[in-house]
Length: 413
Image 1 (cartoon, rainbow, N blue to C red):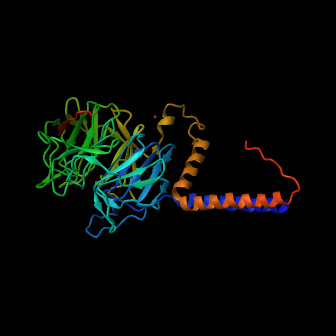
Image 2 (image 1 turned 180 degrees about the vertical axis):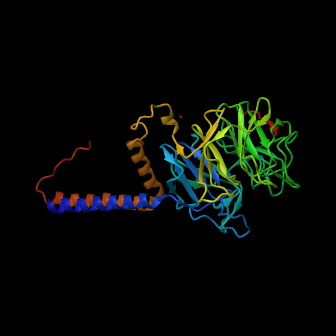
Image 3 (image 1 turned 135 degrees about the horizontal axis):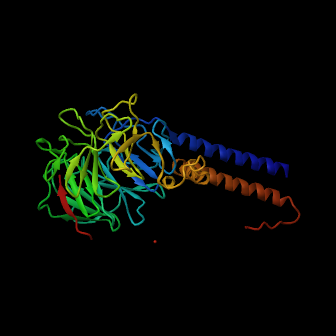
């Protein structure tokens, strides 16, 4: 009996050590810089994929952490962000200038489109990542022929799993296609009245079921943002970010590449009046950046990486509190949506322990699937044989109880 107890203790301790080792190795606070990556919010995780290490050059350097995520279910400070590196999941596509959205039947699948393949890797036009099971695959897609443009586009997703792709390069085109992420089929739209050929533009799907396209690069250079708009019009730019404001009536753009230094980095477009303005801003204003990605999480526009800044002055993740449309705030503190309506007592600001533990277990499975499976089998088999050995020594056996096609109008600015 002593032998059995000691052996079980050693096995459990070894399993705990493996689990701890996997969890510690999966966390990283200072990943490689990157630009032309993708950032996709699925459940409470921002998945950051691909890109290249600045500066932009023909000699592309891949970030060591090609696939990672940021947990936004708990509060954090941008001065000290802990990412989870999941680059060792089998089949991670290596590319820059790709676009990604979430879709699928359960809205839990990352759809990655196009981009420039890197690392001598052959990449399909569309790849998917099942965020529930941590599996990459290349789905078979039917329907119309797929788009020609592959690089440097901007994603738009509707409310029914429609993934809209427009323009892109190379070659420069102004084709509009939609990928049905539920039924896995392509459909080509008419290009009559579409914006001019471009890449590096901004695009936002509006509550009115319209997509607004703005700026970008064309064959002859930068494109203006003053088409059909007025007000304080932004400088011509490309490689900027664009998100829908919390009121659903405005579009916020940040940063970008321009022929001249950008005096104003942040603009708001009133989509009812199609009028540009510079919002009131407080907090430490960051340097402009381009080839980054931005998305809205709770009360914040979350900006991820990009090029044009240095870590000594700015953080890789930027937070703009957009909850008050009369005055935005650059901040370093993120409060998740689940806590914004709670009283801000010291207890309410603490992460939920059971939730955090659950996340860590999932991380262990995602990162250390090989170690976890093998270790789990070893623990189970080892424990079984030890128990059988003990049982056979007894003269009597002991019973152990076991205790669920919409039409899009296009506008451009």
